[in-house]
Image 1: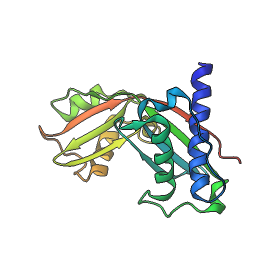
Image 2: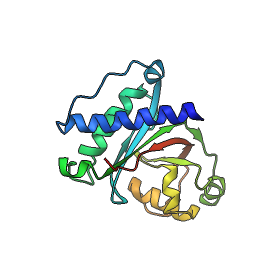
Image 3: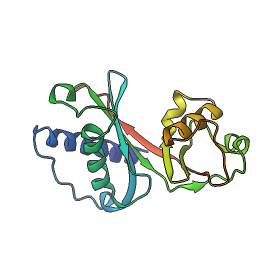
Image 4: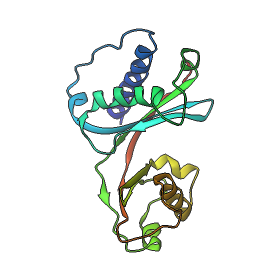
Length: 186
């Protein structure tokens, strides 16, 4: 438990340092820990005064953990299309959360009702693919959408599908996260 917390603190620090470096507030230190070189998928989520300020990530491992965290932190701060690029004046008020994703597994469901019944509120992150469209919600989204049907409907809308769309082409996978964060008080 303490080891995971220590690693989480390193990941959050790396995310914050990557953003600070891009803002011109100092160079991010190099870290040579072997565990940071293992492939992993992560999301970095930024909040300012409790409101979402950016969230970007990788759904599948495609680069080393440390590299993925740094890249996603910069993308969340400066490239999330929902927000303007983070400014230096905001940085001290931004909290940083790093989610390390488990490998995805298929949610076997032939209908919307089966899908809703199979989901584990508060535990599952869900990735939806259908007809060339895709979207994901981290498990943290269950906090604002605790109802399975509402969660799945919002995920479909996020992907660009009608809220109640269902077809044999719709594919759901799930994952869990190891979540680490700071309070943004810097």
